Image (cartoon, helix red, strand yellow):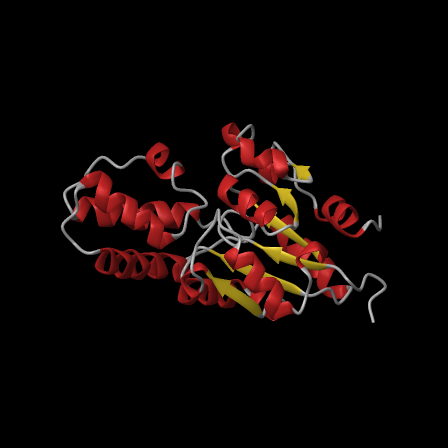
Length: 228
């Protein structure tokens, strides 16, 4: 048994473990251009960071008056994204090291993401993270996506862990809010540094305002476990 038994760690995927937002942006840009919305910028994309793909396309349908159904838009965006993700998705090096440190201690880990289950599995397999992260929850499997607590609570249930014993790593304000609602500690690594002052990040136990540039595996391990 690990000397650190009792701690479980739940990771958001996109923007936390892997730098997948460029692929999500490109998939969305392509989809919207095909539906007559040619000027979708990175700044526009940043509004949707941390929100599930289903919720994102539902908002686009309303915002841009798209004729296709939410189901059609979701399937199209997921298809485009998977093509891009399978071609190239970068794991943040310090995040990979952090996962390896946790695995060496035998700590239970899970991924809880707003992406589709197929997208999560493709990224984990393509990056080799599936060797460590075998418990996966997609927002598609629960009633409500982030900022609701559902995905994190379901991840804890599958790990057999009490929410109070779980630590969440998140890059987006809706995810930090979801962790707080779940009663879990949170390490927040804002993907968009200018959003570090968002009220929901104030709930994080550890807020790294500099994002991934400030994150180190050793420091995070020490904070999460209390072991330096």
